[in-house]
Length: 530
Image (cartoon, rainbow, N blue to C red; front, side, top):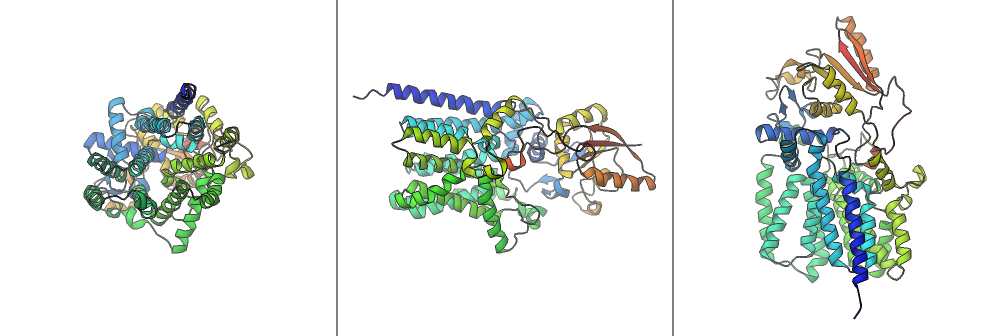
């Protein structure tokens, strides 16, 4: 009889280190940075849930009218699937309004994913090498850890996608499994309907090409899942549906070529954001063909199908940006990890030492992502760990402190750029945040009862808070207003780099502070009406 106790104890030690590392990466300094703009859209809607039971856009004297009310209908956010806001509402109600309270339910879901992964790793393959490869790959994926700790829909959709995929692969035709799959799929729709559609397409393609041949699902069960999904998701879509708002009508689908170009961008930036090791994914293609490995083929097919569906239905247009909105692809991170681990297992099954070396290079450096050409060799996980221990200065926290100290209850502020209004609205709610709506919208039935301060140019705000280069335009406006009898004076300047470079997308994030900036155009400027 082979004594496996030594192997089991080493596997347990690896998984213990894995869970401890994941906990540190997900929870440490969770509330250190203020919520950035997309996070605050979730948190503000959550406050609306606390106040009214619904995703209201009204918060005392303020209205969260992103892009002139693009998401709103009847002064409620009716474009954004509501699950994330309801999750945040529970935490904010219990712990009070703070960045930590807004993020903690999402980080907790992220750690639940880590616990689930550890359980599956323990049970699925008893080898020491497999345990190490999975642990190293997951801990080395900084994008995964960053997305899981945001106050946004990312954590729910990643966890739900993994659980749905697991139930699908382990299908046993039981009623409880059918019910669980239906509930999880509905929750995914309530978290992000685009991810729900993309995952559904992936499961359909996988079933037609692979699972149908070995483990067919009964027609009755398939129809039951479809019927339950149609009913529950249809009811939700009667309330939260972007087609009922200006957001739905404003999204320009673009030409077929635009969609194809976006497909290429999405694939390219999956690699640039280090969602997966691009070199391993490319190598997996010939290995899957030569070895006829169904797991690699299914993983690669899932990546292509998911990216294809998102590229078709994404609200992103290619005219105003040069990178993909990779946040819509966050559920693919576990798939990329799985493809990488499977490939290394196949190639180095009899050479564990080489497997460990290649894994550390692939998952803990940028060598196989090719970004080494522009960025030089770097280890994003190491940079992230350093940042967790020594956080950078970010622009919102000092501005929030200034507003809380200097702006009286009910005084008004115009914030530029517009999207940087919402972190201040959440963290410093005593001010009235002005000019979110166009002057022409005063006649809109939805907004006609709002005070004049909310409409651009109707009533002068008491303060102007300007982040970065927009100050050049604002100084020109101030000169013009002075000629018309309205004067503003600069009363504060916060010497911090103006941009919020702590989003989860790696190409929009820095792990080191920005120190060399122009204080005349790249700081934060505060003007007061005199």
